[in-house]
Image (tube, rainbow, N blue to C red):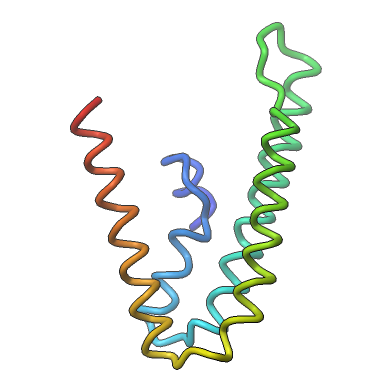
Length: 116
């Protein structure tokens, strides 16, 4: 369900899944890998779908593989960095950081929508 809603709005499913899980009491250390896995799977399915559609379509809908690879490497590096830094922060700090990030991204979406 998160993947469908994320796809409709054009955002990664993990950005929806993580705050939902954390708000339901799941520790951030458990929610983060689930969110990353969700984002990874939906990204693979999306890229494969558009690559397949590009073979039968006349329009230019093929994925930009260079951008996808760059984003994937950034996610891989971020996941590694998060895994290394996570033990140094208590759960309360991690929840606070997640809340601040989620609210900041939401505010950016609202600002972009009002300016468009």
